[in-house]
Length: 219
Figure 1: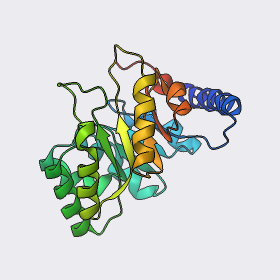
Figure 2: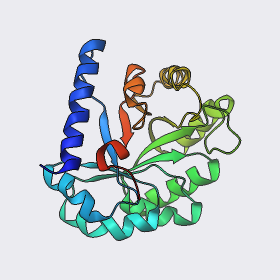
Figure 3: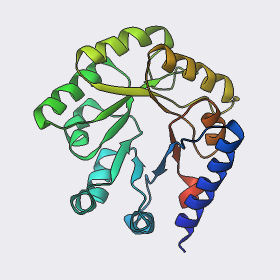
């Protein structure tokens, strides 16, 4: 069995144990973060039947995935990196989920392109949960207004997404995200990476973004 497939199955088993302890039964969707990895490295997972993959650059995604998506329409691609407005028309063509909507200008552009392409895309609003100046995301105090703005554009907002500060305990941020998601009555929550996905699951994460624990270290 290929290493990445083995690693994925190990993660699934670990998650299953965690869910048993939490007395929950629905596992989160595992997004295999394939950014920067060549398609040869990703193919064993595709052949194994894994469908959710995360990328953060539009051009890299088009180059790697266009042909595969034509052959395998069950593959779901998740944009987890920052999206520039000038790349939206290309992003809408290739991605099924956008996890990083973080401005009115971007939301408006995505809505225009979705309408033009008549394509369904699920949207997460990225929240700057750590109030970090250098990070993207909507300020918590502006979240309600921004959510309503997205709804007025008819964007299919299914949940919130965050990347907590790397030098602090994620738990307090996951707790706050869980609370914000509940307040907006959203069903999905995108949080948790290789280092903290088990903690994220405790706080109702439904999409976890795991790269190095599946594919190994990036070169």
